[in-house]
Length: 93
Image (spheres, rainbow, N blue to C red):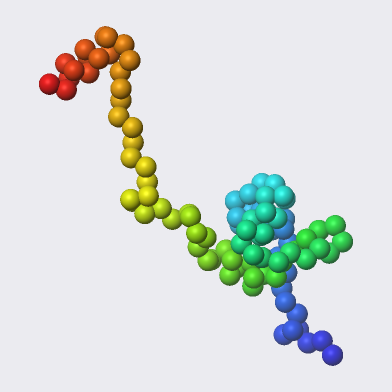
């Protein structure tokens, strides 16, 4: 016999779109694949278990957080024309 405690709550891909800040159905499916959230097809629509989705959503993905040493330094301005070079030299003195 099936009890209510055994039924897992579903989250449909349409509901995920707003939570993961995506607009396209296919983007949400790729997000689930990258974060290892198993999708189940029910007729035309797909869903995941809410618990699995929340765990994946709250787990930081690698490569998202950049340390200060990982950020590329900004390029310096290199004037190409004579007027621009003279103006730069004038203000750098």
